[in-house]
Image 1 (cartoon, rainbow, N blue to C red):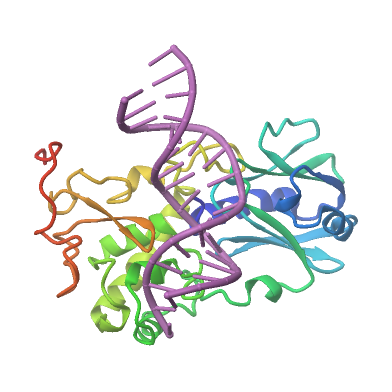
Image 2 (cartoon, rainbow, N blue to C red):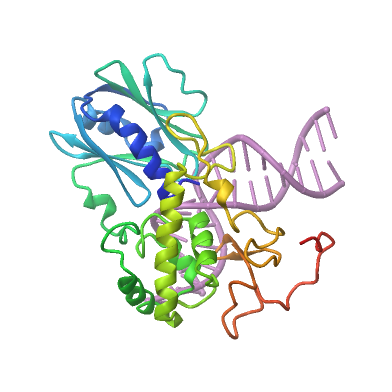
Length: 292
DNA sequence: ATCCTATCCTGGCTGC
DNA sequence: TGCAGCCAGGATAGGA
């Protein structure tokens, strides 16, 4: 699943291939990817890309004379910039032809991904929370923001208006590294816990960017076609049943806010009087239990 | 204010 | 071996 580190990798890789290029035309193969293909292509034809960056999980390209090309990969979107004639395969959704004979391609197996043309970025990104790797995201601000809400930590971290760019993988990894239970209520977090969470969110995302994101299934690939390698560093995500790397306790998987959630019930103490989820009591051992 | 469910999709996995 | 059915998961809308 493309989250901040994957989207950052995509933006960094397509940036040198797009900056300075003028869009000469294109083709939309799946209308819903762009909303209205005629309006989309009309707005883009003749525009020149001046910069490519990232905001949350959005790729943003600044255009001249005006406006922005914005993309969201959702679950399975991919971006490539390749020479003319490159075959994007069965999942091609949008192609934008460029003035040097290359073309920008948007591919998407599950069709949830989107591209937009907007005059003003705020039309799309107005509600996004702070960038977790930006200067405005301080431990102090995180503490204040956590205490201003009464929500469970896991769904709050997934809320893009709270902090932008964190998804299911990096939420679980950050909470484990900060030794915080996903069901802990945000208004009960101590200053020390907020400092830890802030530090581990930033460290996790930074390390994942260095490894060009995580590829554990057939979907996420960089614009150069390679998988990321941060999946090799996962401590809890996707590792239910395996021993905790810190203490050896069997890693558990729960469902929180409709999302698979991975944790160590020993390192991440369940909140007092929370349901037995993640505690030591619930659930009979399954037949698979007992390695570790 | 917060939570819950359904929706959009389809490759890949499970179970028979 | 084949096939039906279920699941994951980001974002959002609507209802509780």
